[in-house]
Length: 146
Length: 203
Image (tube, rainbow over all chains, first blue to last red; front, side):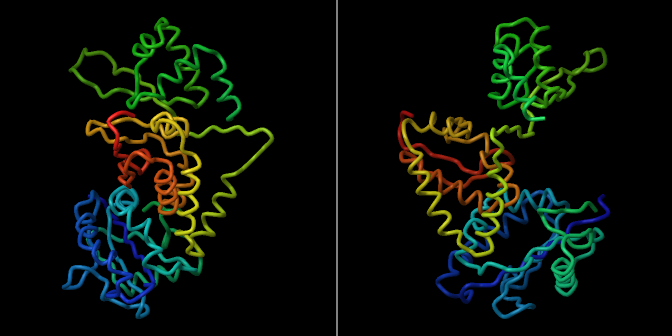
């Protein structure tokens, strides 16, 4: 069994309220995409509330949603993000989210069996923004091995 | 070095060997190459090894079947993933493409970029679809469901750095290009992320 898993946080600023017509297509895709993640090779865990996703959680700002997940490897995360039906909402993200002027996605290694918290995840994002990619906080473009 | 690699293709038979290997979906053996190109096995091996030395082909070994005494696994050849490009005078469009892709992402103008790609695709249209896609480097083939799949991503390195944007641009380009088919995103583990459903019986 692997000693480490890959934790991932990405945040996105909504163009309009989550229950607005502009966001309707995104909301409609959520159950399918979340289900797809759970069935994808290497998936370990995702943050969700009783509603089945994390879009109600606003730990950063009121219009910023979060996605916090754990995977077995960078390859399995990358495979899900870019080589499945998840690519379509990625292609359309500008319809729903304001472009970011700072890093909005951070990856880091955690001991297998441990789950990340939002607070810890926020620290990693802050580290990435301050110092750029490092073994403690990195990106899909510049990954670091466990 | 890229110029040397491309120079390795100068000789006609070696070029035929290379063209055969890269057109196959799966790695091929020396014997398959010899038969396809109608040359002897020793000559096929010679050319294949020269191409591998030049970095144009990679070698792999077939999975072992049979127990002890079955013989060593077959040596197979496939296209190398390495890119080789020579531009004279020196040109570096990819550098600028990377800068422009980052600018699009930062400013959020993806919709305008996709519209521009669609227009460009329409300008590139002409003639039968499959040959046109082949000319553009997509390496089209029909899968068992008769969906047209594309083996090669012409924008691969840029797509690795900016996947959502480049796949979106590619989809828009092909939407503009393909007039007698439906184009959609349908990525697999390898190859181009787009699949095409032809509307016509004949292509």
